[in-house]
Image (cartoon, rainbow, N blue to C red; front, side, top):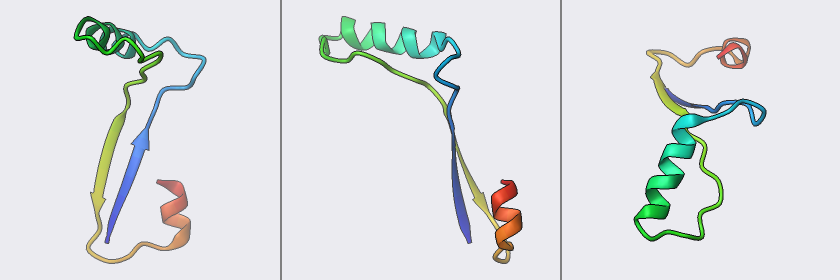
Length: 58
């Protein structure tokens, strides 16, 4: 069983990577981009299906 987890910074936290990506995209001509947030994507591959409680903990 595969579980995909997306981790994003809170909206209240400054995201300097997101600002850098937004600026680079604007420099590349994509002027309509207003806001970019950079996070992490995890893919977990379980040998057996975990219980609902364990999935909630993840």
